[in-house]
Image (tube, rainbow, N blue to C red; front, side, top):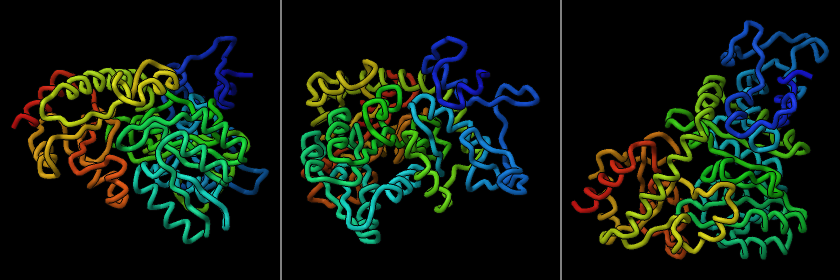
Length: 402
């Protein structure tokens, strides 16, 4: 069997060599070009030659290449990269929300029960609320803690959707413990792995059935791609793929090419961003204008011990959330005064970005619940980029002091 065939099947061994993560990020696409191109080309054709099921080209997972909405060679190359590092079968989407939508439609059912967190990306919560009315399932919002999710699962559920590190206050949940509870209750566990990336956490290896990414963030990594992905276990991916086909939310080939190029540098980008975030968090924790810092890399953070045990590397993510002294107007002043950090509602790219979650990521969570969760109007979320960390710190300091 050729080395390509090994890659295409998601196996991490080629010619007796165990391939490490950084190698699979670069070579895991498994594409073998007839012209010898090292970089997989962009197949922009929306259609492929198709006579019938017996007379057509097929992808490595047996799906015919006939229509872009269903399968595309460039998208498949990118999917093989993520599937290889996460240990499952990847289905790529045009956005992270498209991936979440397809997964929920694949596993929720009328009259059933879906468990989610009170604190997570609020558009996800809004989607679940609307789908619960349309599909007719019960939506249970658990407090963002391992114990609360496990307790909710003790009463049974069809689907449980969690973020390992919650957006925006960075509470860490024990995915392995939740996976055990989900298995005992016969529940499909879906983990949004966007904040932690496969470098810190691989949910399928801990017992989850689906891992979701907003590819827009760390995977693509340059603030110029919109995309999503769901990596499912080998027995479930077809259900997710079928919903992608019906919804028409396939990733575009150009986006797949850019995301695949970005993924090649994920390891070196994310490691630097995490180290810089640690330094920024330590700086903010001592700043007189800061009321509170949320970052699991700080020994004082209540989630530090769990993160240290759960994450595969001694890193704690590249997002830092913190509260400035004062209210909403003081928070807005910081956004207006930063010069290197950009005020923008995203994360994971080369540029450092800062936002007010109450006005963006958490806007669809009702105000009282936001207050209980600690998502106050003076809370800022900082995505640390690749700039020199001293420049980031000096920029934050001048904005806070002014």
